[in-house]
Length: 134
Image (cartoon, rainbow, N blue to C red):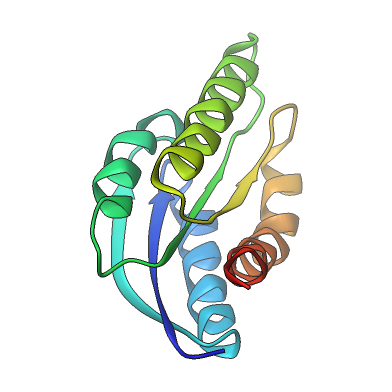
């Protein structure tokens, strides 16, 4: 595959996990023939759709990935955030006809589970974007 340009939007609400996810995604991007052209950090997963939309609208971006961890708290807030974000993100992929690899873990997950899944979710999001470009 000819090298393609990848954008990354990452939620850094859980900073240590986000940094691990971003580092793993950058390694996976290189291994999958991507040039990372833009990284945008947002506070929470719910905040991902707007910067993703701006990123996908650029001709210089061939594909994108989204990264983050939605951890369970005392209410169902994690479920609302995860489901709304997933719907908006998939809609943007279809609207712009560009692949978006989904590297967001959760809902109903502990912080420990999120940390354990960080690298895997990031790498698989990059691989998903590459496969969708074929």
